Picture (tube, helix red, strand yellow):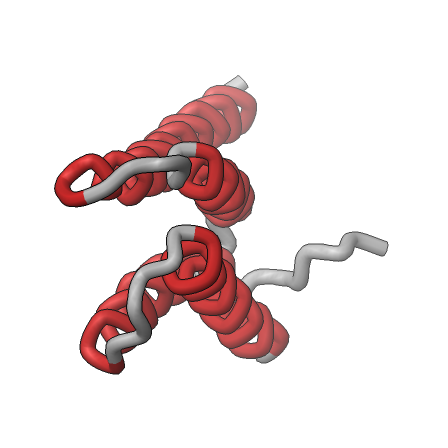
Length: 131
């Protein structure tokens, strides 16, 4: 039995909510806990919106059956969170934005790799059906 739900399954809604909650919690922990940034509701809400955008992107792609996009974007997001935590060190001012940039780069790379993998898988399926 596969852990990943089938396309157009209601389970994807729960996976999306879990992804949004986990990503929001991790970003808040890194930015407000590890980095020591002062808690501000407007920043917290912006980080929530960022996590919601990523969570919705992965959830919707999984719901439509794009498992490569879902998996790769999830791995890229996790890698981005790890890189964000690693680059959070003793930086101040504009330098602390490097950690956020690393998060964006890793999550974006995961998305691009997932889309490319989906295109390759689609091409292989089309090629097999023509034979």
